[in-house]
Figure 1 (spheres, rainbow, N blue to C red):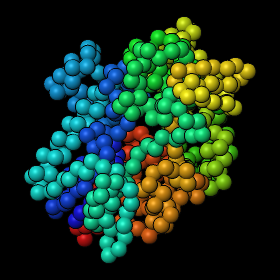
Figure 2: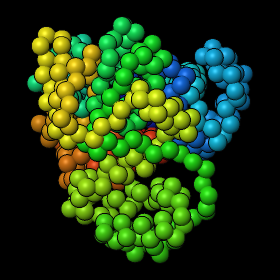
Figure 3: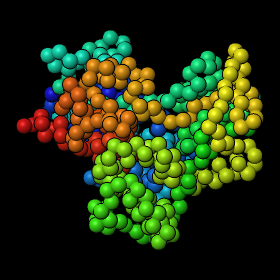
Figure 4: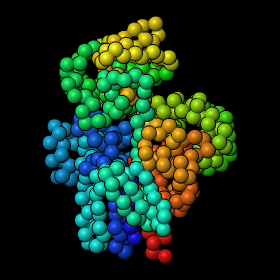
Amino acid sequence: MRVGIIGFGFAGLMAASNLMRLTKNPLTFYIIDDHADGFGAAYSTTNPEHLLNVRASGMSAWLDAPDDFVQWLRTPEAASKRAKHGIKAEIAASDFAPRVLYSAYLQHQWQATQALAATKQCDIKLVPSRAVAIQKTDGMAILTERGDAMAVDRIILAAGHEVKAIFPQVKSTHIIQNPWAVDALKGTKKWASPVMLMGAGLTAVDMVLSLRRAGYKGEIIATSRRGWLPQTHAEPNAVFAFTAEEIAAQQRLSQWVRLVRKKIREVGDWRVVLDALRPHTHAIWQRLGTGDQQRFLSQLLPLWNVHRHRMAPEIAACIDTEIAAKKLRVLASKHMQVRSDGDLLSVATLGERFTPSRIINCTGMEMNLARSSSPLLKQLLADGQVETHANGLGVATDRYRCAWGTLHPNLYVIGSLLTGQLLESTAVPELRAQAAGIAHAIVRCHEW
């Protein structure tokens, strides 16, 4: 059987690794990604100040081995990587590890997968190009930007994050649309003050740290519609879990909102209550009607994001120091006028006018397929090979993560494209479960 994996971030890597573990028959893998030497934007950073926002104990790549990452951190290989990047302290299970170490851990998984492939006579072909179309004739073929056409029997779409473009009408090289591009912060030391960040979430937090490490000393202005920074992780001060009866009884969004508020008042720690929701989030979300899902997305999602996706305490301390020193301003701005005269930018908002040397896009992912700039996603949607989820985000799938459309059931979806289906679909705990489930489904069908 031939399996095409489109995207080689964490999701694509672990889909391949789980398949390799499970298969009893030789497989051919085509892994298509124009950055196939890395594992996605999240772990491409080499800055040791960029930390994971989940404790090490929750970051195993394997669903059936929850302490795998913690065990790897104790190996000589991990110690060597710490020394290479100037990370002096050992990382405990309760710590927020540097993402550069997690990238090394994923590289370890990839090397193990390649070694296992050799013993199972499986063939792995890395295709360093971008998938632009899926052709369906007698079978399926993945077409790439450089002209490849690979016939496959199953496809795993692990396309990952697509940056949501900002100010597309303003033509300026000083608007940085992709903050994770290799040359995004080139020449940072010479940038004039201020630099503006569009967005105030975790990407913006990363950019503050990156700008300082790159030598930028001027003012940073982060703007978002509400001006909310991510909340901070803290040690729990209570033990709490929802009962099975409480989970089953709530059918509407309004019921869930009332219950969560009630439990926060009773427990006294909102973090504990939100963390107790995590094992049930997918089931709760899929039980809500489309109207309730859309109401959540339009009214509550920003509040959910800043409380659910938090900063490590060390990172929060750095941000607090920047704000206290008046080196970082966070503005709540719903309306902004941006103009350019050549490379000279002008921004008017909240009665002030700024002339930033750079504007960096930190707004997050584009989840609406109708607005996607990806040739592949546009083709899949136009040809009816996938269907947009009813709430407007990502694609609709069956319970095995097969996309509804003309390629069903041979096109599997993993990762952020399942946001409409699952709400939470970008963090390692969710992705490792999806990777394991898809691998089991493919192997089960193949071996029948």
